[in-house]
Image 1 (cartoon, rainbow, N blue to C red):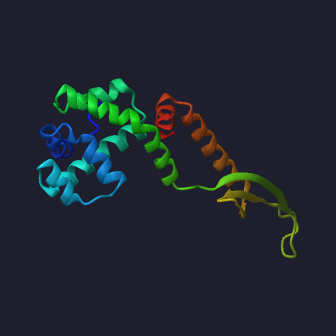
Image 2: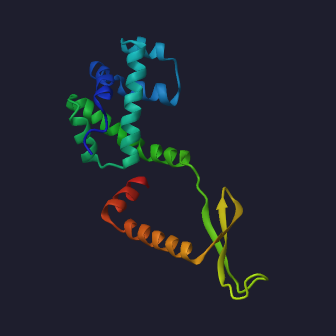
Image 3: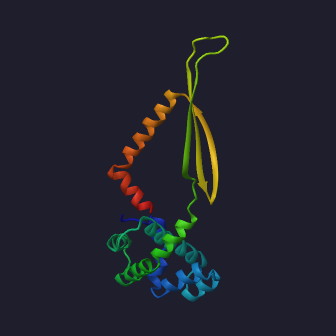
Length: 192
């Protein structure tokens, strides 16, 4: 987990080392209040670009750490690699601990709302003969899939032959089996 920031992010956070007391000031003034970057730069005695890039790097660090729900120890390891003072590392850790739940809730609100399963209806149709062919067997599976999306119900009607349906079932069973692997469980746990 070490290395939530790349070298560019580390460079942009360098101004935090110059003014340790400005960590909370910059974070809350720019992100929560959306105040003027020029005024913030003057208060900290650094350039406007440094403030903007620093806030972006700090936001990236907090967002990625919250998204991955990394532990205190992993966060400390990630920040320790950047070479900041112990006091600044403690301030960043406290900032992360104070805001990680709120950041995760905001990230979950921003996530796209995908349709969810509600119901499934199916029907097997078999054509036994036609005018031109008296002994023709042509099976077809008709599926009506009911979905919920944003409180609305929609229905999708699908039609397929049995061999394609069997292939689809095999692919879905393979995907379910893949979801039981440790790698996929780790990914799903980090997405929550």
